[in-house]
Image (cartoon, rainbow over all chains, first blue to last red; front, side, top):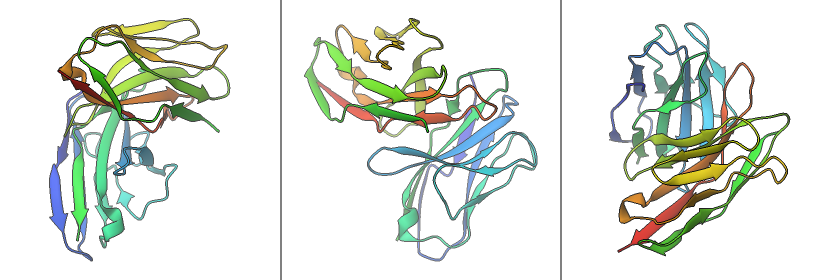
Length: 112
Length: 113
């Protein structure tokens, strides 16, 4: 089972602030994903990575950006947060030869 | 494209009642199918999966059978407990390089004592 950590777990910030949501994993999984979960519960893929220096946009257009400089870390950054970014953000990982994605506990973001 | 449709909630049951949460999918080829569960304040956990037609996934008393003829993967449990209260997500994974999941909209289950 993968160990996936997301920080912070909860964040309340004002409009216009720059924020970075951290996702780290200790299992050496090569594939990592960011999902946005809206209040209606539906999950949308916003970014994914096949490995170091690989990042791709997902199905849902997002103003956030990601980076993958190290296998263990896949941070997500919002340059200027807006109330429309209020959501829960879930990070997930997958080992290349496996089928099951493992999810972190999520970050609940509230932008005032 | 791929899509997953699951019954809307909330589903409210009494303890020990029988549970069915319907899930149907649209996909090309032979996707793998999953049920994930999300307890309050937590991320998603894999509940069960099936990788080919007629496979049955099972875990913690929950079961789902991969039915290709009806493109369905309904979740069932014979006797629910209060601790089963959570949101359940049906998902499919297309067997390609991205290994990306397509999720249904989620179904909230509330079990009352």
